[in-house]
Image 1 (tube, one colour):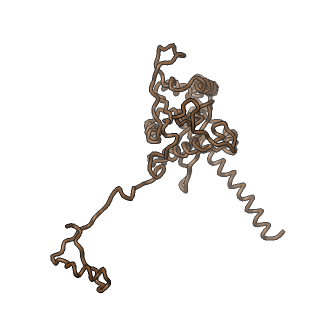
Image 2 (tube, helix red, strand yellow):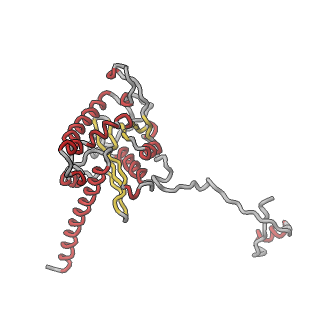
Image 3 (cartoon, rainbow, N blue to C red):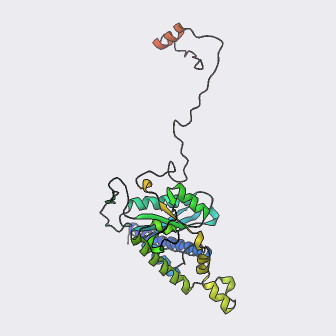
Length: 300
């Protein structure tokens, strides 16, 4: 076997091993984040999570310091939910949530498969019900009770849903869900029912409570369900505004990037000189008779 063939073969195998290692690292990181944060969805089995990353890794940002954050998109009928938005505690406060939301926003605008269309088709921005209104096939929404994430969503063009009454609530109570259409709302309720069943089954008990009593272990297995139910009223619905569907990213220059308009700030330096420049001297310089540049006071 030639040395070139060995090099290519070893390089190919090394690339596969590295890819498998990276996927496993990302899956373990997300598994840890979901275990620590009860506001996120129940973590899958690690093997299933690795298989999920091989098929659809979601939106994950990282640099030479490690994995920074993660987010994912899920289509529920005619709506797309931005969920599992999490930033590593070590790197919070650096604007990485803006990068995650920006990446999700771009994919929502450009990915036809995400909207349930074929790969070759284009996303139609025109809403057939209203010729003057621009609308994507699927509406982008997000739920959160985190103030920092809510601020990032608002700066990205999301608007908090205003509670109102709807027929399915018998017009008795106001709810944010009334801002969604009935069809997508059915898919959302069904999705939440399945999530409820999974959390009701339970999950792993924290390592520091393995030797606790039976009743306490039962509650610990369902700690995520009790946490989310107890804070249910604090979760707010955010909907991507219609006017943002065909506009540029509101944060100039992209997420977490400094941007300065070239004409936003102009600095003018002025000087004073006792000797007055004669018009003849300026004319001589303009005609090329002298190479000495005359001083012109622009402050007058």
